[in-house]
Image (tube, rainbow, N blue to C red; front, side, top):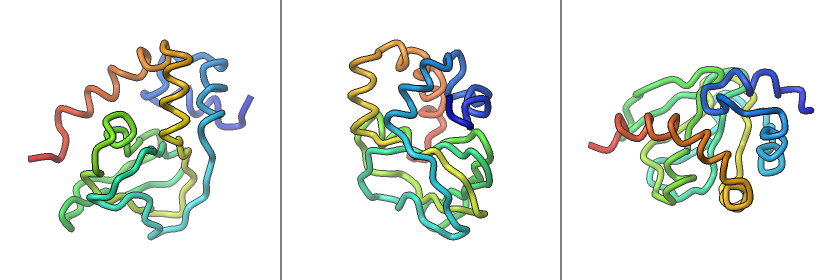
Length: 135
């Protein structure tokens, strides 16, 4: 059991997960500490990973304009992770933060091996696609 498991189980993205399911996520992720101002994702860049905020906050900007803050339990990078599309926003640490960095390549292999995880995550990710920043 990871020390962040209880926190992760409270996050909507991992709703319905068991602790065994989280073991699979831990196998393709790393817990990282980031400093205020660290850029995690650059708008327009390609990426195959996503992050979940365990503690702290991230800020999201699109075309140089602040559009949102991501608080504990929030996540970013899901479109690049699942759709292999360029990032539509810049994401930086608003505060010193702790994040769960999920490796995209490992995650895709995981979903092939344990497809029920995708079924559990899909409704949350799909709800985020509709109000996407792409206008």
